[in-house]
Structures are given as structure tokens and as C-alpha cells.
Length: 520
Image (cartoon, rainbow, N blue to C red; front, side, top):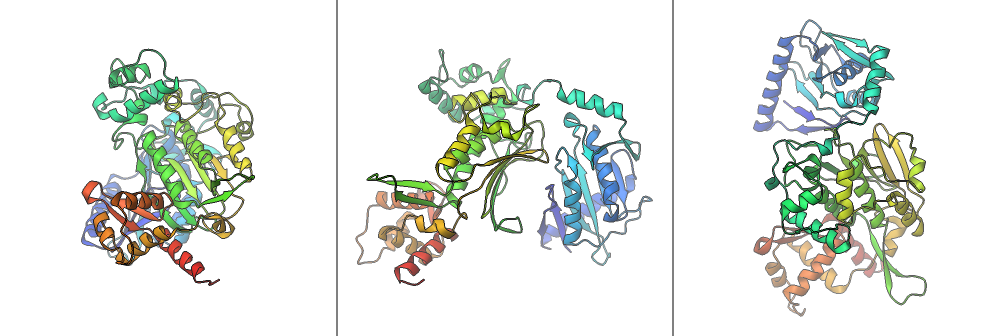
């Protein structure tokens, strides 16, 4: 038996093999299907015989989104409640993905599960669920909004659609200003708060008398408290843990081979974390997957380091994404997607009323939808207050010889697309990569021979007898430099810390040895 469990709007699913645990999950899901079927169709549940009725299912999902409780569609179940299942192929999943892409604004499935029908010869029931999207209604499917009336789906009356559109355009109590239910000051990262305060005072961006070591005083000066309680902006910025209450504080990053999503080289687990943790994780991801070269430029005597794409422009794009995303939408994430021919940073949300993507490339006022959050990021030195961030992104890319980045609005997401002057992670740019030094090459070779993570002590013990053994401090410094290039990795802390060779480090070592041997 096999069960697929997913939840992405793309329709991508993760398959669990038939281990005892997976069988238990399959049994649980089948029991859930039986329970749903026993309830019968209602204002939150609809049955479809097969995915041949996808268009009608899309209309129903629109109705669920426009309601106050969300809802579920089951495929493989007749309207009378007979469970027959259906054959499911990759083509079936692509059709579901295409149906999901027909919504405006973009939607995110709360659940996407496939469950085998017992004694059904491999046939499956497909479950699609959405949460209420009332704060962003109306949701349109194929250009039309729908409503649920009892167990039927109908086109939304024009007057109701206009009413919802007017409500959506009116200023309202922003998510970031709401009191964060279930959180206290003790749930926030005090060290991070103090760091931001000290940085703000030192830069002059946080003025007035601030007791930088008094967490509550700092939060009060940053306008992150309401009657002594943290507001949602404080959670997004400083929470130690954001799950399960605020799943929208999420970063998703992946490296793909080629120019599409068919082959994944490195998909990071979704990071549910505060803003500062997300920004640091994105920077590490860029350093891991982009090549760094060094060359003498403009008659200078010193070598100048250049990354394949300017890191400060990429960081600015991530900073803008976490600052401007729509936090009221609990689905989706800030996303970093790296391909051979481009790098994309996106966030769920939309541009200010009346703006076009072209406006982001010229002088414009800063109009962040999360003004409190943006103010703290400004104090921390992550963003500018005057709307220069997107202009700086363009300027840095052009200065280094790349095409201007594209700013796009696609299916409810705002996207920054960086296009490099040469393929990323290889090709012509590899010739500009800084060559390995002999000590670096030796460290990589020792890690390769170990074939597993090793401690610094074991690594030093593996030095060849004819090689002078450097100090632990020197070796640690060299390993750190290799880690910045994505060639080594570190796990654990203190005496339990262990170093390992990354796949990229193994390729680099092999290529370096090939070049040293004079092979093409």
C-alpha cells in the first residue's frame, strides 16, 4: 500500500513508502475518508466521481474560499456517497495543478492527499481542502467568483462581488497591529531584540533614550507592544517559535537543475522562523549555491571578489519580500528558486493600488503594507526607508554586467527575477572561480577519504606524516572559508562539532585534480 500526502498548490506530493508507520498513516487517512463520506455533501464538502469534473470542482473550491469555513472536495466518490476511487497518474496531478493555477488571487491548498481504496486495485480517492479566504475574497476561478448555498455551488451575484471588492480595498486593522494571541514577551528572542536595539542606536536610526538591555523598553520604543502585550509584527520579527500559530512566517528555498522544476538538486525544508532567521538562512543558501570568483579589475593591485550575482542585491530582494509579504494570508511563503539561467525571489502579496512593476525601477515612495515591521527592519539596517531598495537592486546588477532584473506580478505573487550574464553554478563563470590553495585541497582530500563527518581532532590526526600539522585554530579558519564557498559543512557545536565534505566540495576537488593533471 502507498499513501501520498502533500499540500502545495503546485500539486507536488511526497510519497511515503509502505513502512509500518506509513501504513498507519494510510489507515488513518482512509478512516478520515470514510468519516467524510458518511457525513454527505454539505456547504463545506463535495464529492466528484473523477477528476474529469475538475472544472466544476474548481468552482466549488472558489465557493469554499469565499465562505467563512473553507471546505473539501473528494474525487473518486459519487454524489450518493459510493466510494469507487480512480486511477491517478502524473498527468492527473498536472491537471490538478493547472486547475489550481486558474484562481485569482493565487490560492494555496490546505491539504492535498491521495488515499488508496482498500481492495480497489490501486484506485485512489483524492482529497483537496482549502481554508477560508474571506479576508481576500472574492476568489475567482476561470474569471468568475462562486458561492456555496447548502450543498450546491452557484455564481456569486455581481452585487456581492462588488461589495467584497470594496471591503478589500478599504484600510482595515492590519495583521501586524493585532495583539498576538498566545504570545508573551518571554516567547520572543531577547538576544535578537538587544542586537537590533544596539545596532539602531549606533547607527542613529533608533533615537531617544533607549535602555538597550531592557527588552520590554526596546519593544515599547519600537511600537511592538499593545498594553504590554506583543503585537503580530513582534512575532514576525522576533519569535523563537512561530508554529503552529503563525505558519505564514515561512521561507522555502530550492536549487533546480536546468530551467524548470523537473529536477531538484537541493530543496531545503520549509523554514518556519522569524524575519532575521529567514534573512540569514537565505544568505547562507546563496553562498552555498553561487560561485565566487576573484580577479584584478581596473588596474587595481588587489583582487576583487565577485559572486555570480551580486549578494547585496539578492539580500535586498529577500529583505523586501519578508517585509512586504501579505501576512494575513496563512498559506504560501517567501520563496527563493535558483535555476541554471535565473534566480527568483517571490512573496505572496500585491503592489500598492495603481502601481505597476515598472514603477519599482524608478524613484518612488516607500509604501510598505507592514509599516511597523518595515520600521524595525530599517532600524536593524536591513532596508532603506525611502523606497530605494528596488532601484539599488537594478543598479548593482547592471554595474556588474548583468541584465536588469525583472519585477513581475504572477498569480498573487510579487516576483524579482535575476538573470545572470552566464549560466549559474558552472559554465564560463567557473573559470573565474578562485583556485584551491594547497592547504584547502589537502583538507578536502582528508574529508573525502573519511567519507563521514569528522571532528577537528580526528581531522588533525589524519594529516599525512610528511605534512607539517597546523594549529587547530588555523585549520578551523580554513574550514570556515571553505564552508562559505559551500565546499564543507559543519554540524553540532563545541566538542561535538563535526566537519564534512559537501557534494559541491567533492566536485570541486575532482575538477581541481583534473586541471592539475592537465586533462581537458
